[in-house]
Image (cartoon, rainbow, N blue to C red; front, side, top):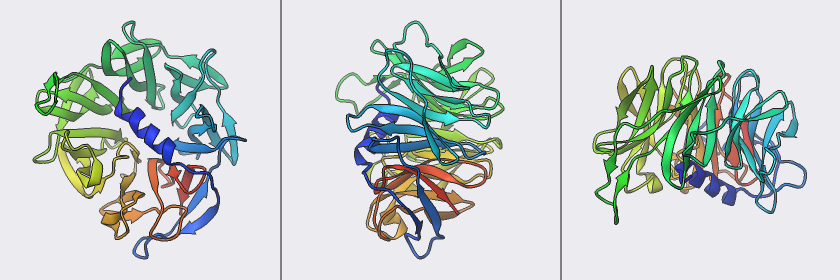
Length: 353
């Protein structure tokens, strides 16, 4: 599958380093301090990344060996557990966890569910060859993406053994492409308890954030002057967070703006997302976490985990000297704790007040 998610995770894996510790971080004097806790990795592993946290405080992600092999892991009460993988697969990754402890992600080319020490292959449409599960709600509804060498990636929904292709808004012919610019793909990134699903799809005018609800797809649009947006998370209030930018530019050097959709309108949160834009989340308090450029926070230009809370932007810092270090945030729960990575440690990080 040729998805932006996989490209983002590959970049994170290259940047995560080998040190660990626990310190009180106050990266910029104008921002509140957070405790930044290194979650560690499996014994003998050299890297890790945390992708999601549930309200009980269980964290899921991956731990990586020096050979590059990933294992899905669960951090719970100070213990890290290898979740394993399907037979014949050589890597796995846990991407999301609900409050019941049900975990979804991937094992090799398969979208999977871990539940009570059992791993289940969720399957995929017959025309696809690989899939990833990226979200699960308390009803056990699962979303993700599947695709293959002869089929474009498309948002996918799993429920009670039934697999549904969520489809696209329309095919887009990219005028900036050097060859045939026909694009027709979609990805699903977030789901709430009402079964509302958010992600991205090609449309007739660009690649746009979308909402799937009750069998229909709604184009959420972009900020003025943009032709590219992605919806990356949705909470129980229906607030949707994501990014908006220009497709040809990607999200390098601040071309993408962090945005919030609410009650049919799009709001610029006033700070750009970095190229790690898919490192992001929103909780039921409306707190948004993602990676931005430290240069926009008064620093030297490193990518940095930040939290947006009712108009206030806080640099969450990194395990490094003040004003330096790279970090990114992937998820947050309703008590305000944030998970992601800091490259000055083994990788997986938990921020808490």
